[in-house]
Image (tube, rainbow, N blue to C red; front, top):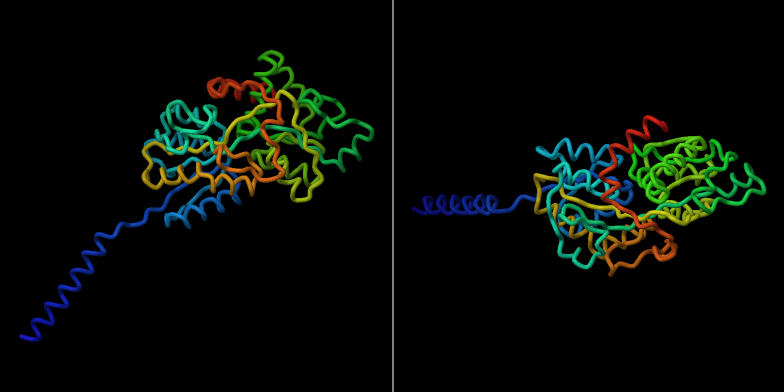
Length: 334
């Protein structure tokens, strides 16, 4: 009898262990397509995992590549989150039915330009364009020539081959620049400007992070890039002069959940995390970006939005025209 009772006890305990194991919720990995730099992506996802216990796996690539992936994979998404990229690209993905609707409670106090009307994307940091100048190379190449202070100054024939900007087909940074010129000057004068400028460009790399690096290391005298990226290299000791030309453009880096995301609950938690004060201050500390969350404080050394002359940028127009503008760019400019 004692042996029978002992066996029954062992079986009962084993059954309870199996039952508890069956009830234990499996931790799901969140999959992210990231357009922001690898350093920032790792720091942010590590903090998210630390705070929530949710592991993250991410792929880092250019804006064009990842937005196209999200659209092509909308019926069977391979990522739950699209992290980064200007709002016009998120509008493009939303128009293609590739984004899930989610309006985070944290976004209620965000400015209107930082969130979509249909709830498919939300901005987490403000981006503005500017000019970076390698002071040493510029002085060597153009002694006595004043630094360019406007977009028109970049058309100086003396600068031929000394300007670097990214390829707008691959990079949201350069497409934002195209739209800046087209919207501030009008289509005809805008295209005339872009064609003239292209004659001074020595390289069109695919990544928006390339021009600050190439200017910082002295491979080019002039670069068109986001001001926060140029500020970051300047803070690291590179010999860069920052210029915020008048009639520039501002936009937001946005985050969205992919349509039919396989880990929707985890994705919503990540969106809430990215819109929070701690994540946005971490992003600013690494990348000198300006937070969208009004409670978050930007890092010292970043250029405040209030100090920059911005045009009234039409993001919906930029999104609508993207295909036609890039086709014309590929045909007439590159």
